[in-house]
Length: 460
Image: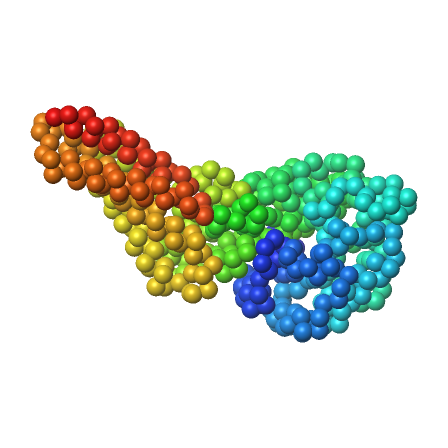
């Protein structure tokens, strides 16, 4: 079994678009990874979506030409996507002409891959003219898309044309999808995100079903590692999991929707590229570790530790295998067996490694990466400090079981407790989900337990 025909990246997120410099860097990385299609489709570009009828200025087209040339020199196709669905009148031939003219302005600089995205719009016809012309939304979209494709193909070279339907996930056998499949020109590729918008898993059966319905091998628009919307507090830099190894037999390929943070997306794209090239031999953990090593050879272990504290994502909603949670679980297990002092000491050492990792990353990683991940790095450092203080407080447990307890020890414990309370209270202002909730819960447990012991011994 070979890999996928289409191995691409779609800049399709909400939020500030990448810069041209970032796009160029991503295309260069894609070439290194043997990925072959970059799609320009940032939702917040008004001329891509809300003002799609307005031509792009010549300055933008000149800048875009540099992307096209970078792609040509490295085997990466550069596609232009337009997303007119919010204001589109499907029966208006003038709008068909306007869309084709806009595509042609990019064909003039060598673009031959085009996309028409009708995602994230109402599921019913909105214009009176369309309701009087078409039997359904699918009927209208098939009419419009086929006319655009045929006209474009007659006027310029078209290497590929990708269509994103309005229903792009979930049930792969709806009447809407059946109508799209039966009417859409057979040379047009159809996009699909899987069982969910951001699919935790993409099973073989999902691709088999929707490909049969659409009467063509589906192309997946995979919403990982994208972190827009309510996921903006997450940094999706964990392993790429949950994609069936048999998908190449029923899918043409994948377009990966990356994070707003272009440079931070690179190691994730590196591990994903390993799956896209050869799903049968892909090992998520090994590919992920290799990608981190390739991205940061001088501080791979520190980067891995940072990544292991940022595992919450649609692929791992609970952040399972968070490194700090593993450390706390090991402490709890040892403490239950009676080795509290030793367990607390080991936990303190682990906490210190977090601080060491922060300092290493700050002095080693590129400034662009540091700027992108700053909110997570700041809170990564604060969680390390909080874990250290909680572990130090945990190390005081044996003192409370001595026959006598001097005032100095009581005061020291009370001060440590007050400091930990202050640190925990500040975590409510955190902006990210770095580290999940494990360290906070552990610290609050220590506050409750040491507080109880202080109250008991203060009567003496």
